[in-house]
Every structure is written in structure tokens, then in C-alpha cells.
Image 1 (cartoon, rainbow, N blue to C red):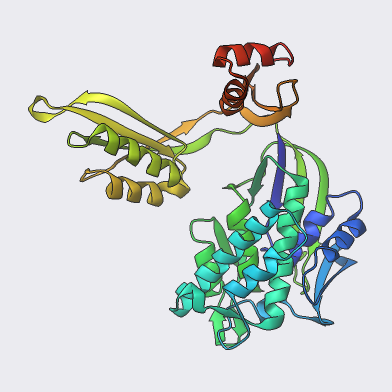
Image 2 (image 1 turned 90 degrees about the vertical axis):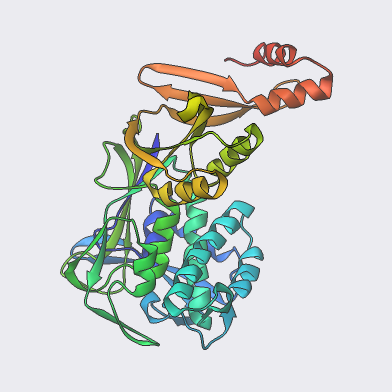
Length: 396
């Protein structure tokens, strides 16, 4: 499995993540050229090779109308200035990148805006960002989203995040490290401080980690193929960098999961079906029912959702909102999973997607049902006839 591991032992910032990811490509200079071609107004990316504590890496600077600002100087929410979240969305939608990159960049920026709105006690729509800081942050966020799309890792993991210690100065005054918005963005993510005096993890860095990284912990067993060092601006006793390692893992480790369960005897089948859909929307990876007998000999249903610990609150809220239960039971469990991917294959009947699962000495392939159903409808075939015809042309 193609795996990206981010070493955040000196925190994370948007420019450091951009620089680290750029070094994973054969020609980092070409990466900078591509970033300059996406059309962020007033912005120019520049790349330089620097050393920190004897380690050579890349520093990526973002100049806005020739001016360079460091993230901690402008990224803690500025309500007196120029750009709203709607303005940011308009800029991102105008960029020469894929729709997926635009959507990811907007999702990251909304995380930042939501954190700032909670810190400052104002609606998200009223959060405004300093002009230079807005374009600088848009550049960092979009660059990371674009490079993630180009690298296309199947799994992204990171170390616990070093946030630094002490205080940081911003427009509103002196704030503790991690800054309030950063602390909100890192909620639930393993992090620590105290070793280095200064702000090591910025709001943009924290938002990017929250959006892309699925697990935080020690580096997994992997065959590393490429390593990138993204250098920060300041000098510390330790090399101020984010290290990105791209390689292959044999399989996923077991995943920590939660089983959340309720018993109900006063819901219709339609209501249970509707609740199941809402549980999936809340982040459950599996939802199913089991017929049970309840008190006073009433037939009922056990409704169970399986989710990751990060989705606990959303799934529990969905249970209470969409079922009649008065309580939700929780059981911690683990699951083993096969490595999964989807490939598109061309046939005379049209393209079909094939779901492939591998690991533990087994390999399985299955044609996507929706593609077979579409072929059957278009050609007046039964589902079995469509499946047999496709299987004759591809190896399954």
C-alpha cells in the first residue's frame, strides 16, 4: 500500500508541508513551476535549498505582491481587514486545478474559519482575514491539496504533533502556544509541547493535518522510497523541518473501532431505514440490524453502527436524533482489513470499475454493481447476462 508518513516532531506549517511534499517528486523545481501556474492572484512561489542543523532540505516561500509574511504573523484571524470566507471561496474556485483540489482546499479553509469563529465568538460568515495573509494561506493550502492529489497516497499517517511552548504575538495581542485556533484544530489529535520555546504548529498546518491524516502514532513498518524535508524559517536547537516519507506498507495494521448499539421496539421499518442512512452520513463504516425480543415479549430491532473513535460524537448524536432510544451502548473493538483499491477497465460494453482487495495471502476482485446495472439497463440485459459478458473480457 502506498503510504505517506509525516514526521511532525517540529510541528507543521503550510509552507513546510508544501516544501516537504515537493521533495518527493523527481523534479521539485518543476513542482514550483506548476504551483505558479495555478493562478493564485498576486502570488509567486519560490524554492530555495537550506540547511538546518546539518540537514539539507527545501524552503518554499510565498510572495504576495513581492512581500513575504510568515504564517504566525497573519494566520490567527483578523476581523478588521479585507477577505471573508466567501471571498476565499471565489478565489479558490477560479484556480486552474481539479475540482477535487478545489473542494479539498475549501474544506481545509472552512476548518480554519470555523476555529477562528469559535475563538472570537462570531459567525463563520463574519470571519475576515488579513489581505496578504489570505493569499499566503490560500497558496499553502492549495499547494498541499494539489501535491497530495499528485502523490495519491492510499494511506496518510503522522507522528504526534509538537506544538512548541510559550507565547505568540498576533494582532489581538499575546496568546499562549498553541494559539487558541490551533488548539481547537488539534482537538483529539495526539500532540505535546515544552521542548522548544515558540509556535511550531500553525493554524494552517493543524487544519491540513486534521483534513488529510487518518492516524497519528509511530512510523509504521514500511519500505521508504523517497524522503522530503520541508524547512521552516526560524532556527531552533533541533532541525526545524517537517519530514515526509513515501513508501510501501505490506498491509494496514488493525484498526481501532467502536460498536455503538441501541435496542428499539417502537420504530417502523421505514424509520429504522432512514436512521441507518443518517448513521452512514455521520461517519459509520457499517450499519446493520438484528431482530431481537424485548420486554413484554415485544419484537424489536438491535441497530448497530461501527465507526472510528473520531466519529463517535457524530454517530452518537445521529442515534439520539433519528431513533427513539434513551441510551447508546459502546464497545471498543478492532478490525483487520484487506488493502483495497478501485481500477477502471475498458470493455466493449463500456468502462467498468473493479474493486480489488488483497492481503493475508488472498486476492479478490468484484465488478462494481452500479456499472453492471447501468450496462444491463442500457442494453436490455439481465444483471447476470451483463456480468457474464463483462467477465468474458476482463480477468476477474
